[in-house]
Image (cartoon, rainbow, N blue to C red; front, side, top):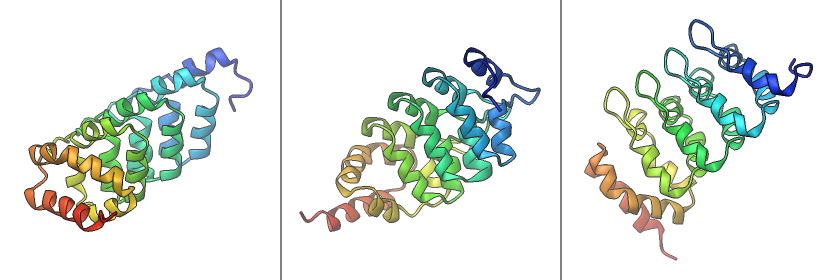
Length: 196
């Protein structure tokens, strides 16, 4: 489809928004054409991919929100993140739609726990807390909206990485609405499983 379009015009074409604020990338995702969406991204120069993925429609949703919220497709979401520089991923994952939901909120709400782990593993450890403390319009963090099985997440994320994250996050977790019981569950899991 884009093979006949000059490379310098592709980005401008893909940034065009309709009256709902959707780009061709938004529409490809909404219509279930993930292969087409990935082909679009494959034809975009690397330096322009982040700008394209940051475009929000009138609902405030980026293409990453759409692929997680409407399609619940993990492989393509990870491929989108892989196409971005690591330092730009945090900005993409912190974008909130009009309901205050980040892409991580969308993934958790859909029950995509494996995808949540992959998303968190794609960002620098120092930025993970910033991503986890984003709240939606109901004042809930991503960890609280879907009653995520935290011990499942703990088993899946490498224990040492998890331990560092949780120990750094403990003061923040209580401040952002994670109850003390949940924090104790985190700490207990780490204690019981860190017998090296």
